[in-house]
Length: 139
Ligand code: RTP
Ligand code: MG
Image (cartoon, rainbow, N blue to C red; front, top):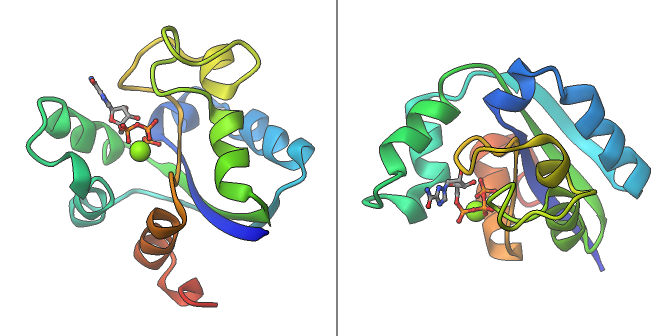
């Protein structure tokens, strides 16, 4: 089933010059890039994006990190794109969860600065695409 998913190359991924590496992995997997933009996330967008984590101990540092520098926002499309990108990304903690061969497993160490985000469900993807790329919502 063709799906769309919202992906972020987080500020650590941009600062560490891994944009090309991460986009290359996406293309090698066979997913299509249907939107792509470098931008600095406003606090309101970051807060809406991570609304499910509001009130958790790591929330403030998460918002500070995600708004702290340019990131790359993208929409990917393809069969089972949501799960396919989560597989490429690896688990949330780059050491404890992400396996070698995944983006986080190969490139990350810090559970807070874990290089990429990918939507975790069809509902999340729709909500996040509407937030980051309103012109694409519902299309
Ligand atoms: P993301 O939303 O960024 O793609 O990551 P995820 O689904 O793998 O993980 P999620 O549970 O949604 O957590 C969002 C981000 O919050 C930070 N986090 N820190 N210190 C902690 O226990 C903790 N838990 C989560 C991570 O940066 C994670 O990517
Ligand atoms: Mg998440």
